[in-house]
Length: 274
Length: 99
Image (cartoon, rainbow over all chains, first blue to last red; front, side, top):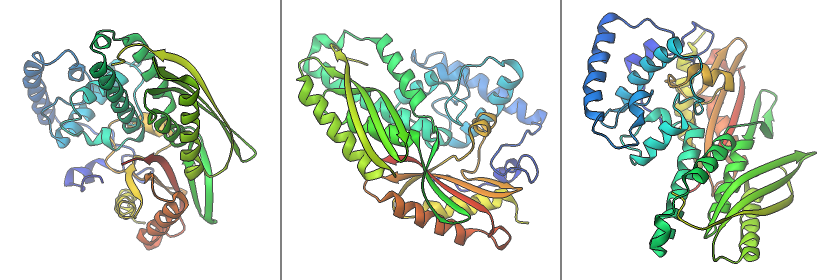
């Protein structure tokens, strides 16, 4: 799951004395370490100048493609400190990763290699990466079947969809599952339920889920899913298939009674989406 | 009192071995996540005053969520040091995972 602790971890965990084990220390980086990191960054800058157009990671907290996971942690720490000092209007980052949607997208475009633990162990980042994979798959299918569609990229639409997904993968409220004893609670997040509804809908051929809206009232969960359907697919059977898939997914995992599931076709996908 | 970081490590290890747990994620209140962005070295969120432990897991799609969370809670309780046995524990299902 996550990496074995190292001596470096010991120095970094429990940042505020006994207050909190999981926050990072606000530690003073020695001049030697700074010089070492600066030298590494300078070397990477030279390499990344030749990188693809998606290599925006060079400017952000996610380390370059040839960094190891340990390198990634070091680079992220230093860069985050710099960002804290220099820019209070920094773009919104994903979960606890410290990276933006654009940076995560660049990581995806690199094939998620080298693996960056800070991204792979963050639920929001992982949910977004999975969504990007589904988008990619549908886009590739459409492009393969219709060569003309491949050139009809709708980047604006894609950006909008990723923005929606980005907002929906947040944890949101904790919905209770059960309390095994008076000191223990088990919960599931709204984000988890939205994601399985989205994933189930995306699993229907020719469908991309837009928004997933959940409304929980008195132990009953109502769902509204907006979808885009690939041009040529029959709308009603497709919407029915989405409704069944979402119902099945939530019936299995949602800790409350399912109410209505509404499916709204909001888009017809004319070309490749990615 | 056992160091909270050590407690978090024990909890991380305990949860990861539960059948049906697909992955373990960073667990923290939203504000803490912003403050800690990119810096976390442990996944569980452990606070000493009051003693509280929070873990976030991904559950396999084919697994029973209630059974997995119950098993995870039991495993975490067993992994806690003696001076943390009264800690408040929350097991949060953060994702349902396919594949």
